[in-house]
Image 1: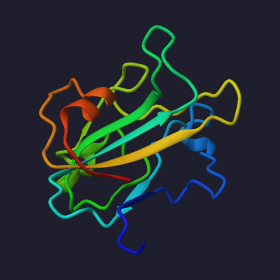
Image 2: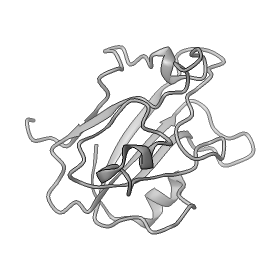
Image 3: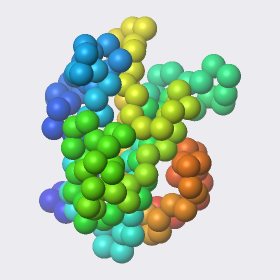
Image 4: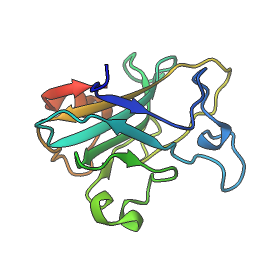
Length: 157
């Protein structure tokens, strides 16, 4: 469908492999970079976007059995079409339309992207982009479950 609301990452290959530089197993400056993501056909009426990246094959051993969040990003203006590689933690540095974007807490209880260090390969990662009918007003308490509980989604890609 040509007008489908969709999310892609140009760096992830057709087999779904996350390149090493986006993981905790990369080297030096090429380690734990947030992957680039881009989206198309944002639904009419969208007030903001939210991105959630999670590992479907691991959960918090001390918490509920839910996917492990690697990145939660909210208040993405609907006219923004992508988050560039290495964006995490640099909203102010990127400035302009990126300055209003907020990053939530990941599974390590830290803000921003944190790439996986996999005990074994073959984990499934889910990248979801939510088209929301409002902005998130939770200060620094942005968590994956808050995104899903507090908003009326227009569409999910």
